[in-house]
Length: 538
Image (cartoon, rainbow, N blue to C red):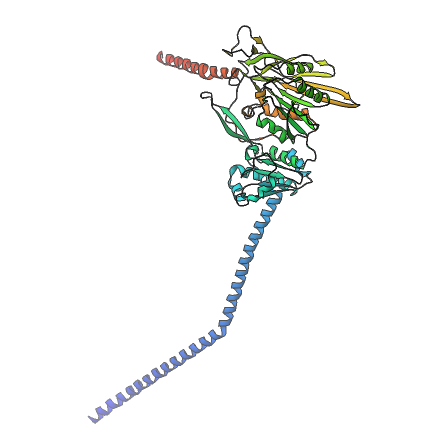
């Protein structure tokens, strides 16, 4: 028993020692583990404390560089944008890609602008935003920007909102022109000129053949012509004067009058019964008086012609007899016939709107004359060439009606029942524009003068000038330059938007009618019958 007990004790003692040793080892390990963790935490804290300032400085450095680069990039964009804007404004770095070259500046304008030696300000009486946001005003604005560049900044653009600044108009009271919001005031130190938006565009008129109602549309842009002429006007030192005679119910189309002002003429009016013709009058215009002139008035006209003056006189179908005026014109080689000119073949819309031919281009050398260069003379009166040369006076027929024209006698008692050709009518052609030139010597000084007589006043009406297919307006632009060559007239082609209407003569309209309404339908019907007949008998 004791031996077994001793054996058990002997056996249990190593086990207890082993267990005790195991417990001690575990405590030691646990203790070591705790100590190691404490050291690790201390090490991490130390490392963290040691490296924390380094990471913060790097982040601050990288952040500062990033912010600096961002600011530099934004600044570069702003500078580039300002630079592009400056270069665009100074050198107009834009390309005109419109099909008709809407924004193209003519060589004539370029020469004018490059040689400009005075400062010119263009005041647009709208805010800049309103100008840019308006289609039609913005076109004019683009022209003016190019003018500014081509003139070397001699031309400046000023936007004025007159609702916010009404006092601005106080400087422009001495004018007959109406100045409103949207007007253009072109000015220099010498003078100023007022334009309207409509002056910068070409307005054409079309006639509805069924209702006979007239309607207008924008067919082109005259901005280059109008603006260049205005610039030339305000910088010119001396201006010629055009005088329009009144007092006998003379008539003048506004657009015809504007041809002179656009050609840099000063404007004046006289009543020959009371006023003298001004000494500086370069051209005198007489528009179909509705009463005869007195011998006193005729003498003024004759003296003006013999002293080197120039006259443009319009006549037309009128029941009023003017024997004094007619006799004076005959002395200058031009006769008046009491014939109303009609043409059923070469006319527009009606036989009384005859289309005439230019037979001598003396007064319009630069006008391109083709088979479709139409000049219309509504309600024209037949003229007569009395002589070709007499007493230093030479006459030349510039225009005449066609061979298909005819004239009907008229008087104060005449009432036409038809415009068609009748027995007793006088067959054409007839002169419709005659030029008389005069050359002489007065007090040792050579003088020359011109008298241009045209057989239709209404060839200068606004409705006729607005028809894009007609050359009436272009003819007079050339004629004005010819009558007074001392004035430098700027002739610049307008830029076309589009042309929706085809203008054809009466004879051409008949051909189109027979082809489209008769010949083609009959041919198609005949072809259909032939095809049907062949198929039926196969």
